[in-house]
Amino acid sequence: MPFLLRVELPDVPGSLGRLASAIGVAGGDIEAIEIVEKRPDGTALDDVLLEVPGGTMPDSIVSACHTLEGVRVVWISRYHAGGNLFLDLEAVEELTANPDEALERLVELVPVVFRADWAARVHRAEGILHATPAAPEELPFVEVLDRAERLELDDEETILAGARLSGNEVLVVARRGGPEFLDSELARIGHLAGLANTIARP
Image (cartoon, rainbow, N blue to C red; front, side):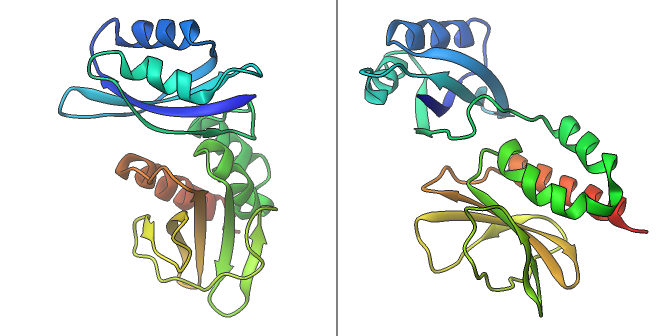
């Protein structure tokens, strides 16, 4: 069963190796690792995609990580996208492949790139123009500044981010239960939204 683990660890040589060893001893099989953010305080946030065999509890993976000095599990959850990881540049290639559908493709790619549950393109007057299957049927239009930002709606279980596509359209991205969108992720979401909007212009 695939799980996504977000972990904070010291940004020093050997940290990732020790983390991988601890996960392996606990029964997890690492499929992919992506550095999400390097921080000025000497720590890093990494996303670890791992396969956990039946009978192995995710709690044992978390406990194994916490035995390492300076390591903290921020979040762990089942990851239904499996090993289908996209990097930002791969997403840009997808967007440029068919400019007429760049905004629709952005909505479909963003949940994969950012390990989110759903995304939607929302128009001020027309409502949802395009959304991934897990998105709600209705979403209010939310004013978003020129840069991507965290959003707040009534659902406390859903973590939201939004980016402006135009004066009348926004991209909304959601994670159920976390983790929070980091500043670096918001910057990347805003950048991809801006590129998709530029590519889509006739």
